[in-house]
Amino acid sequence: MGVQYVYDADGRKTGVIVPINLWNTLNAGKPADKQIGIPNPRKYRGIYRDLKADLKAEIRDLRDEWNRL
Image (cartoon, rainbow, N blue to C red):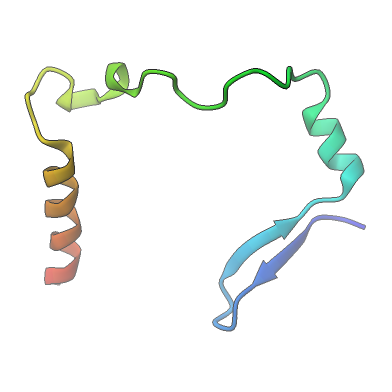
């Protein structure tokens, strides 16, 4: 059995089913206590790093741009 995709009523992929042997292969050798993700996202803020910008307000403004179309 291979990887299986789960679709919603509109035909969009919403999930995936991975066979256990593939899952175990992907997770082999990874420490269980290792944190996933970026521990300090502030140092990866890109162009906003040196600005005193309100990121939540910027995100709201970006979302509003899509709604205006």
